[in-house]
Image 1 (cartoon, rainbow, N blue to C red):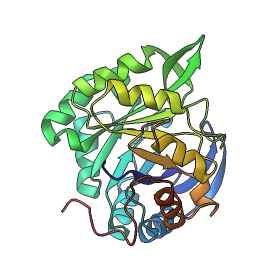
Image 2 (tube, rainbow, N blue to C red):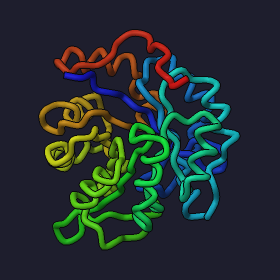
Image 3 (cartoon, one colour):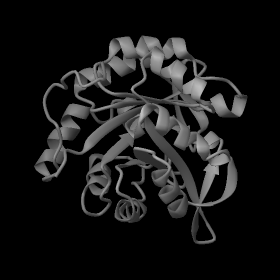
Length: 261
């Protein structure tokens, strides 16, 4: 079995790391460059940077900040927020991103995923999907969960895979920021219907939550979390020791340089 990945997420607004519940009620968590360095040194397997207001405000992701973070870390680095065309992705790749995450723009024009995969390869493309339960169905949302769409989670996940996405980052908007655990049954179903890795996001409150979603209960390939790391509630190196004791395969020890050259 492949090692499960632990991925801290930096939600960025106005150049600062923030965190709230369902992207609302945001609190300042600190300087993203400093935080990225700490996570890299603690043994995080990857890092995700999301400019959470880029789509809402119609801005492009701040490439200068991406450059500063990329220069500080030695692990793969995924960047998302406001990516709506090939040129946006190209700018971020040049700035130091190893992968790009596309969400709202891909829902509006699914060809974006196909075009990115053809140009850069599937390993460069992460399809981020936000969804919430409405009348018993998981409905895809955009713009930080503020707008519902006519897409259903599982059919949309299959489509983005077929279009060439290399991974799916699914966030349950019902669980995001609540610290009450992940939507394990949803991740398990996604893992059953897809052949690409699934990253779980939304709901981590304690080590046991992460163990659950990475175990046979959730079958996710990676767990993404934010506030529990930002507030120092859980250290990544200690989390990996805990997961290893639970029989969940993880990379332990100091992370080697695994970034793309």
